[in-house]
Image (cartoon, rainbow, N blue to C red; front, side):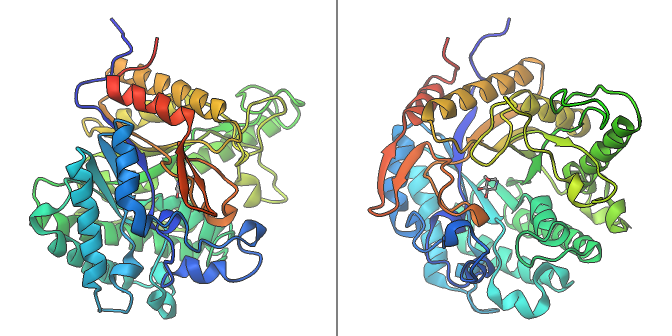
Length: 442
Ligand code: IFM
């Protein structure tokens, strides 16, 4: 019989990334990009961010107070290797101390090696377009693994949302390097996969028991009701006629291009994204994933416009009257269940971790509702037999939200950026109670 209780040893955490919380990551590409007016909303710059580089121990105290037993953070490659081939021991020591401080508080670290940012010394090589970059990443991964030694984490992620990086940077051209070039997108795809494979091998060589995955962002993509179906509300599958057929085709194209290529390549060795002209077989990629990481925020409703074939593949804004977040996303809890179900169908028996799920809203009550409604869907998936072992809310402290800057507030802990004061929001205490009792209220 279904209850509100989660499986034993379920991991309850929050997720963060280096550039978004640490502050003063002056040696990476995003820092440089922020300095150019027009790239970040309101001219925001990451600056000191949440000063996480100095305040991490106090922040972990708050996580402990919230009964968290896991925490996801990323290592900043440009700190560890600020100049090519030169590793900063003090920076590595500090990351090691983060692991120690977390463990001291009974919190299991999940470590991401790459969360969007790159050292600036990769610029002459055009970052991930260059086929030498995977070897550079392997060297960085090895430096981290060696430095951590026996104290290395059990759970690793190579990349965060690789398809978001490709789509935003090389397809839509909204993030650096602001290119629209499918050829480059294809190269980046293959090089990220190769870098993942190399890092996987490096970690396993030192820690055969390590559990390695990556955080894959997914949305169920659904067709807008037929172009001729009127404003019936976005997201329906209905509607007749040419528009509807086109939208269904476009939605399945986006689904195939965005949701699956990384995970499929790691399962089958086949790296394939037809719209980028990539169809490459690399058998050594097979099996380089021990668990599946899902980042889920919303669904995407696709309304294809042949006059704008690329930009019309970007999901529609939510229909009028539908609850939406400050990021302009529809609140759609059923979507996390759909993603979990589809992931399990394709990748079982690999366990699944929800490596991100969260919301930016002005009213914290709505954050609480979002957490509860999404966790109910996670629980439903567990009750249906899906092996889900953890959930990471995005995010603990409010932080720097990429091109959106500081006005997006995702945190269960409010940050006053003028003083760096932290205040746990009521939704944080609710989440803390869920973690404490390992069950949903009610
Ligand atoms: O802040 C980001 C994070 O870096 C990656 N996943 C989505 C989050 C919210 O937009």
